[in-house]
Amino acid sequence: MKKLPLMLASMLLMLSVTACGGNGGNSSAATDAPASADPAAGGSSTAQPAGKAKIKFYTFKADKPEEPIFQAVQAYNAAQDKVEVEYESLVQNSDSTDFMKKLDILVAGGEVVDVFMTGNEDELLERASRGVVEPLNSFFEQESIKPEDEYSKLLKLEDKVYGILPSSTQWLTVFNKDHLEAAGLSLPEMGWTWDDFRDYAKKLTTPEHFGTYFHTWGEYPNVIAYTEKPHPQLSADLKPIFDDPSFEYFFNLRRVMEKEDKSVEPYADVLASNYHVLQQFFAGNASMLAVPSYAVRAALNLEKFPHEFQSMYAPLPRSVDSKELGMTNISGGGLAMGAKSVNKEASYDFIRWMSKEAYKFTKEIPAFKGVDGAELINGFFGENTDLIDTASLSKTLFDPNLKMPDTFSVPYGSELKAIVENGFASYILDNRSFEEIKGEMTAEVEKVVQANQK
Image (cartoon, rainbow, N blue to C red; front, side):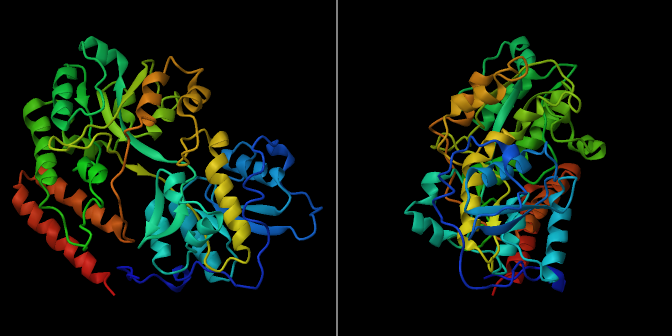
């Protein structure tokens, strides 16, 4: 297993708990329990059936009745009589970074952790790299299922599954319907390219608004690397992939769209303004946006993003030379099990149930494949069609052509991402050549990889 680049303090060394013999619960009984149980019926009853396994679930979601994750846990408790989940919220602001710090402190003091929730993939895999998260492969084998058939994405490290996504975030393109119609453009179809994206941005640009917006995150210097490559910065043998033509293409695309087409807000202004990633789109200052699918639900948050236009949706563009259609990026936080959980079978049962049922409470797109997409979208947003075009959304999110490359992850991925962010900033702000920037990024990535070798 690879070492982390920075040696954390002892409080962060182990996400483990004291082990003892015996497992409670049954891996299939509670998972198959009905999902229609009344959430209010579960929870903190003191009368427990004999032999009921008790597990603790640690989360950064608030311990409040109106919190959807809290409601889902209550529903699980009410739906079966073999496992009792104790809801442990460590923060009330949904900050997963603060949550993980507090969780690690508790664990260093001997706290028992059965199941925990992370806000992103890196938070989970960083801990898995230390050997303190339980792989789930053997539990899937017990169920006689292939997890890849069940989920659109799994959180894996070296072929071991360490986490299941209770919800998935999928990249797509969102459009301002009013701007689209004013420009005389129709929604693009699956298979459009980034050259087409540039053309759309030019046609959508007016004196009042830009055609599109690019945020400061590390995905935006080369979205293609995140949608069409196994890893956005590394080859399978952990070598930098900045020689891949997509990097020079996308860096140059960003430059010409800003400097020549004037179809995108200058990167310097974006940095200075410290926008929310969705701010300029919902303010009507950008007509389209390549973005994760949490932009969908944000359309309903009129207090934070006041607007009156309807959002329409299309797949992400593909690279010009790609023969594959429907390539996208799927991400999300994970549900994971502590390596020394007292009740592993019960913990797995709870994780599986949450991955298949929690979306009914959170109203987020599940990573679990066994859902009817059109029915789900209409159920979530059928009353909000003035703001969300459900037909294009369902078509985009559940297109049968959607796929991801066979991906792999490393626990130091956030460091690699930052290298690309910094490299692109220097490229666009200092007007440097791609070759010069490529050399610097390559050297920096090689240092990080070497520091994390055995």
